[in-house]
Length: 144
Image 1 (cartoon, one colour):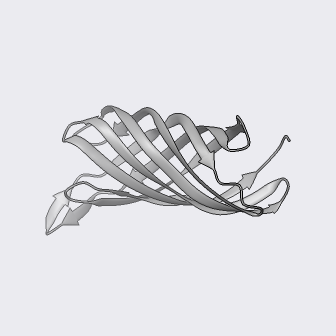
Image 2 (cartoon, rainbow, N blue to C red):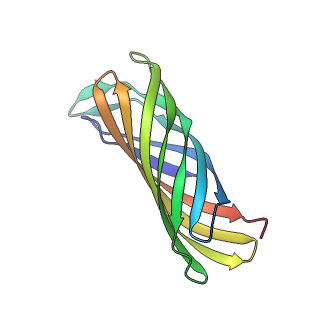
């Protein structure tokens, strides 16, 4: 569960949720697979109406984990595709992102944390747009 801010002119706030899967490639590198959906309701900016939109898609990439006992910070790089659905502009987008976060490992199989993501959306009708998202996480860990 999280919030999203599109760094457009005008800026559109939104909310949404997503799924974040990782697979340990080594002690410090993880394969990242993410998917999310955010809703950005129509609003007014400086008295002018702004169309709302829905953004859905996913990314694939790698993350570097700074495994420090129970506190586990991470940062990564991903690329993927998204689809924007809006009243005046709908279509696919290419996305490049930098996910980051800090998890607290409660037990060997469960962690909670906070995560964020800076995303650059390409092929937009306006050219390029940016998005920053923040999430609260609960993570189930299985395997070794």
